[in-house]
Image (spheres, rainbow, N blue to C red):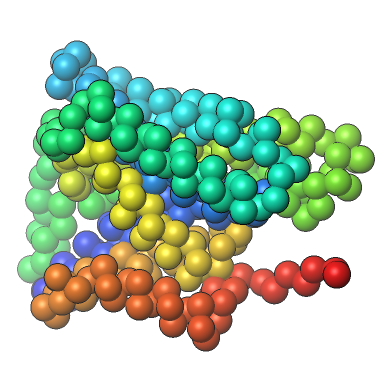
Length: 292
């Protein structure tokens, strides 16, 4: 039971990070039907910003956290304005190819500027260990779970109750009708990218707390796992992204616990294949009918 509880905490901690990242995928897809494959590399940029602020500038962890989140948010909006806005009326495949291109651009730019080797990100805080009924739980895990829960509750309130959230839902339902009703569609899309990238920045900080290193390709696999979580929960669904992230995190940790640590990534992609075969819309996704 002690091992089970420890793996459960690890799974919830890792799953919370995946959920935060998957929310960015789901929000952008729900608005403009774009799979933003550059989303994972925004996390990589956030990790490098933390490393630069903590190691090179020797500033406080609070400054590093704020700088990472702000850099990710601004980068997300900048990518949307430069790479995606000019292709708003282009075929969907053009946006997808552009997203892949932006992903490679960020990765190889980081490798060119900072080198291919991994950079060790200094600790944001002293990680303490607590004993609960014979099982151990770290301060890092507690902070990750609390921050992820608060972020998810705040995002749900934003989307469901705020004026901007209503505009986001209107644009996702019918962009043309939303424009006719006086909603600034371009500003709403930019705001959606900003929120998604903000969550990616938070996920970047939490990920560096558990895995304190930054390298140019770290966002690729992390982004793919978050994409699997979004598909599993139902891409375009915010609660689905939360549930999918938790499930993927638990599956990865328990796969490692039973001796499949070398195969844990294969297990996750097998889950993706099964979901696409059995329930392509995901756990909380909905079918969309298109007129022809």
